[in-house]
Image (tube, rainbow, N blue to C red; front, top):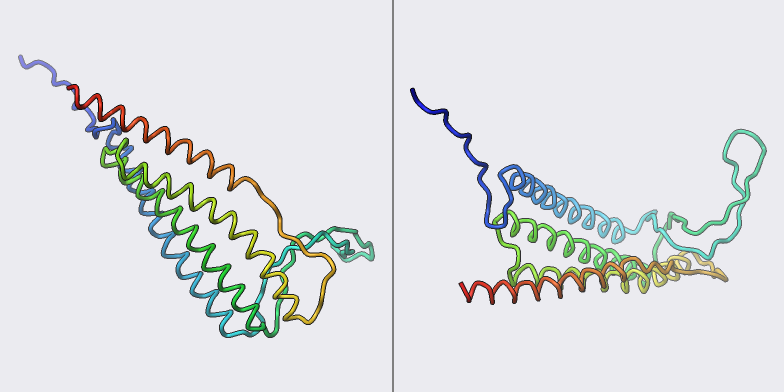
Length: 211
């Protein structure tokens, strides 16, 4: 009488991820790759619209001017403060075109860099590589990209706003760009994680050297 066979153990990689986790990781990496392609296409379309220069929609940030809105069919007007508005500009000046294209390209580069780093990090984990030099470098690049994106967002935002109003032939008294510290905080946190992973990698190398 044959003894009952034991169920086969799930295959795990070097860092303990089982088959289901590995499949999930590859799936996420594929989604990120598709997102990179979509973003590249959207950026190309945006630049094409700006270069064509005909009724280009441009989002700008304002210092909350008060307006009245008619939100239904009644005659009741509701007061509101406008922080962000999208203007359809019939014809952009060359300065506005330069500002918008610069903002679009910089924003896209930051997003593409962040997604690429996340995707490569996931691929390394699926392959069983955690505390490796490549992952540490990816985390430092992610931290730097967040910081660069934060700085470029604020610097180009005000530039685009001013150039857009120049294209419309108006001189608003108050314009602004929202100061959001979350990307800077995220950059700091990722930098701390990168430093911790770098230290963990050194400890792992020391342990491997003793074995």
